[in-house]
Length: 68
Length: 205
Image 1 (cartoon, rainbow over the protein chains, first blue to last red):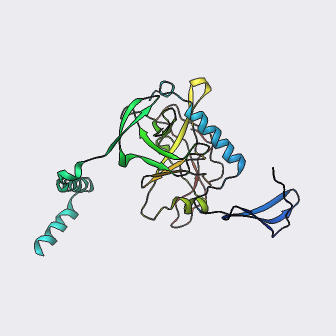
Image 2 (tube, each protein chain N blue to C red):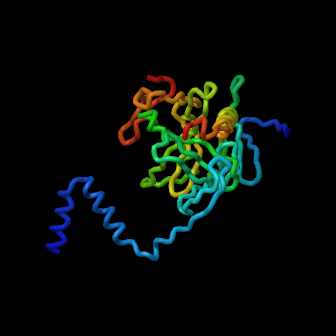
Image 3 (cartoon, chains in turn cyan, brown):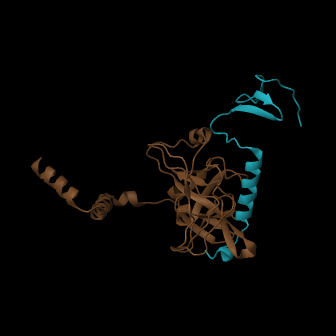
């Protein structure tokens, strides 16, 4: 894992197109701004993970179980 | 001109259903035999065997479903009155997800997109996407849940799984056992011109 220290207003580039900006740090939370090409989906990790698990569970079903 | 106006008027006087029928018959009447050639593709499914699908019925998922590879899928159904359909991957015969029309179970289901998702899927004003939700078998095969949190939108041959921004939409909403009973939805905020937002997550009737 690459670890970088940033201050509010400073940015990180992922490749040439994705910009992550630290907007505000307050207490234990950090506000982050993300600029990405519109073809790139952006998710909160926990939502991404839960939907990924849900998709995997859905894909494990058989037509017999569903009756269709 | 006179005849045209009269025909227009008579069309107006027809009932909507009759008009639709008429337009349907006009459309089929206009089709040239040479245009009838439909390119079909044979895809293999570990669940359903060999399936013939019209090329134009294929759905391209440029970013895949979440956690699944990008590629083309076909919506397949085993019988016309089946409650569920399957999104069958063209490239991976073993990959298929059961999906359903959420409105069939959740009468007031609505989807609110983030600005980024709205830009990503490039919906125009006239594009009304078809909405599907993935279905999961729960309770040891006794019941089903629908993922209302991350619906699949399909328009113009492209499909996207998006995150519904309406707060509280359930990742695993139990499907009502009795198709007649529907999930009650609580109206939330709505502004003039905007589609009514409703929360459909928690309350099952």
